[in-house]
Amino acid sequence: MLNTATSSKTTPVLPTIGRECADRSTGDTLKLLAEQLKPQRRVVHTGDTIYQAGERFGNLYILNSGFFKIVNLSADGREQVVGLKFRGDWLGFDGIAGSRYSCDAVAMDTGEIWVVSYEALLAACVTHPGLLQVLHTAMSREISHDRDSLMSVCTLPADARVADFLRYWAETLAERGMRTDEITLRMTRAEIGNYLGMTLESVSRALSRLARDNVIGFATKGRRDVQIPDVGALSAFVQRCLAPAPAMLQ
Amino acid sequence: MLNTATSSKTTPVLPTIGRECADRSTGDTLKLLAEQLKPQRRVVHTGDTIYQAGERFGNLYILNSGFFKIVNLSADGREQVVGLKFRGDWLGFDGIAGSRYSCDAVAMDTGEIWVVSYEALLAACVTHPGLLQVLHTAMSREISHDRDSLMSVCTLPADARVADFLRYWAETLAERGMRTDEITLRMTRAEIGNYLGMTLESVSRALSRLARDNVIGFATKGRRDVQIPDVGALSAFVQRCLAPAPAMLQ
DNA sequence: CGTAGAATTGAAGAACCTCAAAAATTGTGG
DNA sequence: CCACAATTTTTGAGGTTCTTCAATTCTACG
Image 1: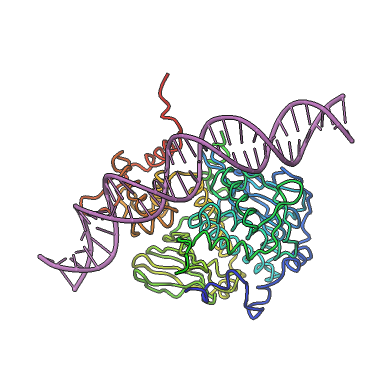
Image 2: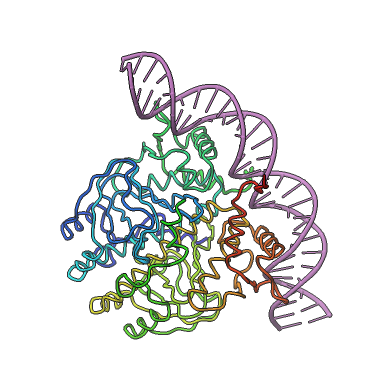
């Protein structure tokens, strides 16, 4: 019904008719940033925190490799994973408005981040307008994706949410030129469940059902590596969850 | 436990030590934008759509008065209210990354929006760095608030979610210098429920319970106007919902 | 007024959560 | 390299919350 209007969201069509770097690849963007900003590079390991809620804002961070989770904390002690960051993503935008970060950024794997002073970035943007475009694109993407997350949580049943989560993960890796037929979830069931608004048991059951339906597979050893032979099958599974009746013929 | 680190989120402390316009009031910011951008002004009425998903991006919009909802659409026809916009908020950031808007922006009341060409804004930012700060602050706020929304939906039971929604609405109005003791929800129960990830019946029941507990009141005629004598009572209600056991003394 | 949309409320059912136990995996120190 | 402990994951059973379906009341508007 609304397919035509929204198809650009699922499959980024529209070649580079737009402004100069609207569709720059992750690698190209990183190269541009490295050249023009000469950022300080920092290696991180699992569990390292790049910034914490309440800490004074000053830097933005660009993820060159590895994988991060963004954790929101409420005054009453609730914790919520509100975002996952992959290669090419920026971290720290939440700190601009209030002069303090409002989340924790935690490394989920070994990786490298580039540290960029916000002040220095703004200065560099004056001479290199392309940088500003890259910055705004990153912020815009984050806003769009946060909205998609909210929609997932609000409109999909638990099983579909897990399937959609895997689909998003695989597509994100694909965009960045990585393997998607077998992905390693570096999150526990509890962390996935927290991110998706369900219990760890529900995540486990959903994964079991996905495996039973051959939408995903588990590697021989360990159940943290998920085989995704066909990403489209995940989307199809989501649709099947949404279909109310089994739609028996005749 | 984490109070000190996160208190800056609920009550924006920290006076204007920071950069020039970090804590500018909504009115001052609007004045600056009006002076420096001379934006085209446009009056909107309930139901008007400022932009739609799939439409080519070109403008950002600043809400001077009135009230908007942002609606996300999925390829399979699901609709999701993913944001509410009040005076001083910007609309259209989602369009920057993909050169097309990814949501619908729908007016929920009569109001006035200011139309700003993104290109023109970037040009103006070069000569007026304060504008860039205002722009980034608006985007950063949106990212932070989207995360708070996700946390609400993921961690709060239905009743608390409705209470937290009213609390946010009242605090948003307060920040903009409007009345908060009696607010007019210009949304149906169905729209509120959609935004909060629950059915319209659950919203209705939650509001009834809030009224029964005297946390809110209903205006004599009609149940769309909500009286909020004490915003703190809403926060207390949320905490009560989170407390597992009734905590009987002894 | 009278109709259409919106809101409330009740009853029954489904989806998900909690609690619990067992199996699998990972990490650690000998 | 192995054994042990700690953690993670799976799976089942029962309970709770929320949804669905339905009927009624209320509100707005011609």
